[in-house]
Amino acid sequence: MVELKKRLSVILESPQDTNTKLLKICQVLDKEIDYYNWTGFYFKNGDKDELVLGPYVGAVTDHVIIPFGKGICGQVAVSGETFVVPDVNAQDNYLSCSIDTKAEIVVPIFKNGENIGQIDIDSHKIDPFTKEDEELLNWLCEEVAKIL
Ligand code: SME
Image (cartoon, rainbow, N blue to C red):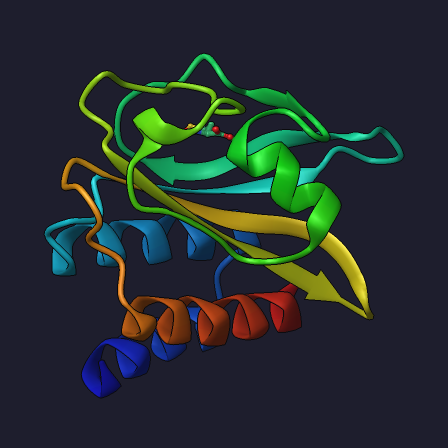
């Protein structure tokens, strides 16, 4: 994890535009953690109560725009709290991106106290996410907020 954080920090501090950095972060996470099978960012869409898809790695998704309250992502946009879903089939308010997805974690990104976006990770494995993942992703979201 320490090594991975260092690599992510190098990307965050590099002289590239924000979307390139966010895409590279997705690529590193996707490559280094085998149970991260779709990794992407969503952001609040201007003044609208909806999320818009940002940089991501994984299968193409229909969910480019997600209204607040819809799906796991939309619920995190409202609650501002990390949502770990060990088994997506047990969720009623869930938007399926791929039939291969078994689990999901969504961690909010706060900037100046405002919930402005999130990182969303899908896994093809049931119940793969640990406290270590939460710790890594919380750290990452705090670091990402600094470059937004
Ligand atoms: N599963 C998410 C939708 C986004 S896709 O996973 C990329 C949700 O329920 O909000």
